[in-house]
Image (cartoon, rainbow, N blue to C red; front, side, top):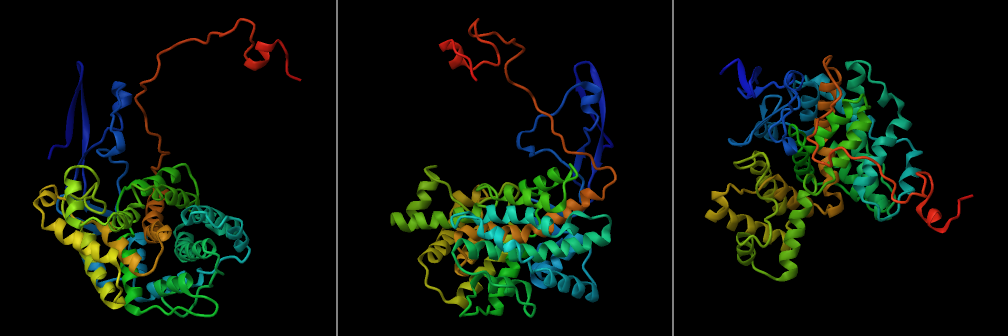
Length: 443
């Protein structure tokens, strides 16, 4: 590949460096373009713009490849766990046994919240969306735990990373409990991360919930598959906010807000709502798919902005979905429709030719519904899973000596220069229009 790219702008010829990534991804470095030519690039949605160089995640959407720190997602899903994968993503390598035990212990020790934070939960109305509560409470964490604001070196960063991963699950479970008017359940020190979360979600003072190990494993896998996904909307938000020097907690709270959008983290909710629509309208799956072909409605949970092949996460999670449904032995019309929809869409050339395969959101919605997780918590579960990726990207940027504040440009298309003209000669700029019309003055 060439070392430089040549750009002709009018009669000016410019050489721009070509950067090749470790997986042979070529990029043209345009950092000097505006300074040398006065031009900028325009790329709505940043689909062709590399915002940074990163060592955390690699995606090849055409080939259906996803790797965390170089390790294929399929291998991690089969052999690793969410917390071990979180360590890999955040710190760069798989941990030694002693390192992993220390990390897990630290996560477990930091699942408890400052008791005074309970009053903040009580201040939200019962109708408050759990995502709104989660974002607000992550920001509030630094008020009760100022150490979250004091990341001076990699050692303190290790402490804060475990702190956030531990507390986010408790914040999420508490947000749910307060939204349904139930007392919050404290975390237990004697169970694993996902069993602990399920306990906090579903236990009651008079009936403790004990998670089936296979169910806890399915949730662990779900979090692992969502742990990182390169420069998506929420991760880019974390980096954008963090580039200003904002704290890790403030940056990931902003990431929660970005994830809240229905086009990002809310996609698995849209899948379940689509299945509910099919049941409510009493239409067959065949009829629904014909509507999709006629562009009368969208097929949610199929296709992806990055992948032009089968989402590698979806292949893994489909097996988990089948296992969970078999373990729970639940009779659910929506889950039956989901399986029929998947089978018929995959067998239809219309969808196959357009590379519209089920994505991770399709199966994650099915699993979460089977586990009894309410719709309002679907995106919250996504946020718990994505926390390691957000933390890793903030760290990568924060400790980069060349970091600069993010400041995109724009192409202005508004009105050209024009001048202020009084509408009424008797009105002064500081005088309300109503007072000028009545001949009175304020005061």
